[in-house]
Image 1 (spheres, rainbow, N blue to C red):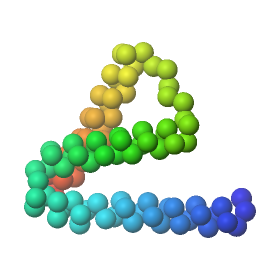
Image 2 (cartoon, rainbow, N blue to C red; image 1 turned 90 degrees about the vertical axis):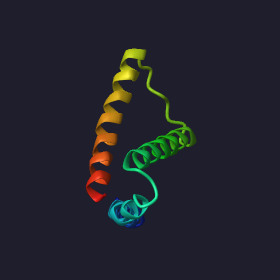
Image 3 (cartoon, rainbow, N blue to C red; image 1 turned 180 degrees about the vertical axis):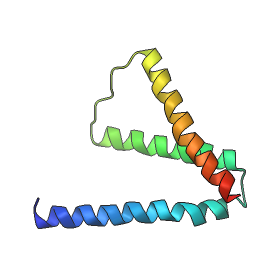
Image 4 (cartoon, rainbow, N blue to C red; image 1 turned 120 degrees about the horizontal axis):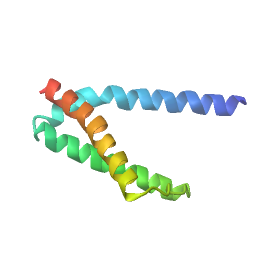
Length: 93
């Protein structure tokens, strides 16, 4: 790996760490305005839209899954990501 790619990777990791760390104080502040479940739904929806836009921008092919596989993937993501965030925000409240 060349030097610029290494520097870019470090900067992106620092940015990622910043956003993960900022989740707690921003979440605590947001809980003063909305309920934890509302915050989880908005966070999940915004992330899904951003990921979809990024995938389209990078011309990533969508996987060819059956309806049952899509339902399973969406259910697991809602339970996993939504459950984690609901636990996080409930704890912060």
